[in-house]
Amino acid sequence: HRSTRPNPQRKTDIMLTMSTSTTTSTTAATGRVDASRARPRPIILDCDPGHDDAAAIILALGNPAIDLLGVTTVGGNQTAEKITRNARSVLRLCNREDVPVHQGASRPLLHDVEVAAQIHGESGLDGVELPDPTVPVAPGHAVSFIIDTVMAAAPGEITLVATGPLTNIALAARIEPRIVGRIAELVVMGGGFHEANWTPAAEFNIWVDPEAARIVFEESWPITMVGLDLTHQALATAEAEEGIRRIGSELSEAFLGLMAFFRRAYKENQDFDDPPVHDPCTIAYLIDPAIVRTRRAPVRIETHGQYTTGATVVDLRGQAPENVHTQVATELDHAGFWRLMTEAIAALS
Ligand code: BDR
Ligand code: CA
Image (cartoon, rainbow, N blue to C red; front, side, top):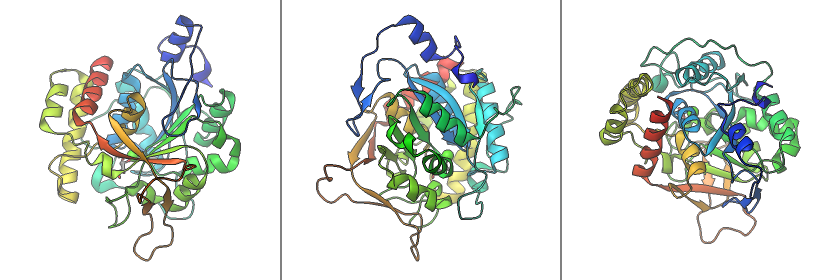
C-alpha cells in the first residue's frame, strides 16, 4: 500500500522519525490500551462525501493530532462512484493526494440504494467546482484496505471513523472478525438518542443500511456514537464562518461555497437557519474529547420497526452497565469545535 511508505507529509512518519519512545494511555470509552496517544492518532476515515464528510477530511488532514492513513468510501449521500471522486477532489484541494482513496460498497447489505441528493446535490458536493483529482482510485477494495491496515498494525493502534452508512465496516467485521479486538476505537457519525432526520425515528446513515449498523453495534468493539443530538449543535453560524472567511484562501473559499449550498439545502428540507456540520464532530472528539462530551450507554439498532426502522435505541436510564462497549456524544463545545475547523483550514491553506 502506498500508505505504508514513509512520506514526509504524513504526521506519523514525521513523528516516528522524531521520537523513538511512545507512551501509552487508555481510551476514555473502554479502558483499552491506546498505543497511538503519544503521537498523531492513525485513523481510517470511511465516508461518503458529502459536504460534512469533506469537512471531516479537512479536519483530519489539518490537525496535528490526527494521521489520516486512508479514506475509504461507501455509497450513501450519492453513488459510490460520485462520492469516491469527491473524496479525491477534496484531497487535491488540500494538496494531500498522497492519502489513498479506496472505493467500497456501492449498495447496502439488503436494501436498495438511497441517496441524499436533496441535501448534497446531484454531484454529492454541489456548490463549488472542485478540482479534478490527479491520482487514481487506489487499488484494492475499501474493506480489504481496512482489514489489512488494522491487521498489520499493533493491537490498539488504528482508530476507525465512519461518517457514512456502515456497510463497509460491517463487511470488514464479518470477513475478518479479529479486527474487532484490534482497533483502538470506532467512532460513528450516525443515529441519535432523541433526534432523527431521515424519518421521524431514524438518522440517514443508519436508515440507509440498518442491518449493517446492527452488525456493527452488536460487535464488542468500543464504539462512540456521535449522533444528531450532538451534531445538531455543530451549526455553521455566521460567526463561525467569519473566522474562516478571514483566511481568504482557495480552500477557505471552497469550504464556504460548500457551506452556502448546505445552508440552502438544510433550510429547504429541514428548516434549519444554519446547517449542522455533522461528520467532523467525530474527528473533533478524537482530537479533544473535552470538545465532544460523551456518556456511556447501551445502543441497539431497530431493523424491523413498523415506523422506527433505523432508530438507534439508547438506554439512558440510570447507570450504564459495567461492561457496556458503547458511548454516545451529548454536548458540544461549539466555539472549540469551530476553532479546530478554522485552524485546520488555515493550516492547509
Ligand atoms: C449524515 O448523513 C449525511 O447526509 C451526512 O453526510 C452525515 O453523515 C447526517 O445524518
Ligand atoms: Ca456522511
